[in-house]
Length: 422
Image (cartoon, rainbow, N blue to C red; front, top):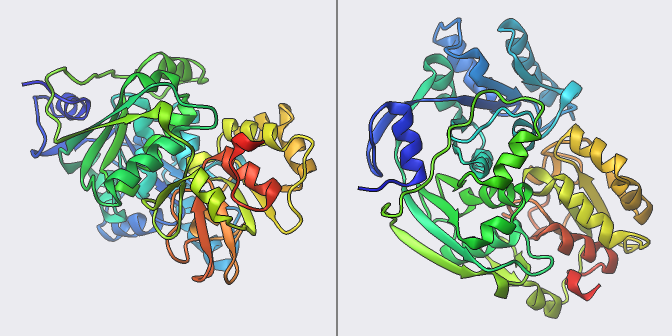
């Protein structure tokens, strides 16, 4: 019987063929923690009396949610992870000196690779599936088990095959493809399943698009999202300064079993806007323009859309233009390298000239932490991944999710705007 790419990754790790529905104990290639979740894992590790990590070079801590610290509590939270990293001389510890949002930073550093099994105590760990890895979020105690044993238990997920057909129209990105999938499936339509993204459209998607695509697989309830290795993946990996290990490349068999197949004609797709208060509440940008939605804040950043291409798109749209007087435009690069590259290429100057403000790389505003909190009844169009009640601030505020082109165009007019109209 044929296997999916996800089944093959687990088979390679456990040493024999496995299929969806089986319970396996698998070695883990990379365990990921951050400043919010890692202290809980550290407490479980230390209270259990453990003194050594099973695989120190397979454990990365990235301080990214509240760094630099926004208050005493966040400073103390970060201190727990920082002290642990120093005590165990962790090779892969990232704080203010080389900072970034974990799901942007680790691929940039060549630390997550095709064929890996990756877990992280953050739901958007599924981002790394864009490289052809099995990558998923787990709870902090599951992370501590991985720290102690170097492995964990998994139920091999069934796979939904998503077949994208056609070439995306201008201003249609990976963000729109995943918002359309979530609109079709709902927030739990892929519960504990793999979303395997395939079809001739994939060749047109940059790595940045693919990261966005896999990043939001969790918003449909999926265990992981995954895109098979190809020339785009190879080019991305070849451009890294170094890789943690050799990639292990897998492809789904033609006779692999899928629990569902979804086909989408991408060439007919418009930019998609997710209205409050669910990522599944998707509407076309044309509908949003008709609805005449006024915005107070535009946010471009996060692990979903804080990459170099996002700032390039925004700079091209905002060049020689100004942000509407009543609008705040906040930019949050995914990593220091993205910030530096965007500066060298002139994108940051263009965007600041237009009226934007640039923050340090952080999860910050995305989770309602800092660097862009919404006040009562304020409306934000955001390139982030969630728009739940109170997600970015006041419970009476509203968040509309969109790609970077729509966000930038909306900053100019002060209303949700179709970038094609500019």
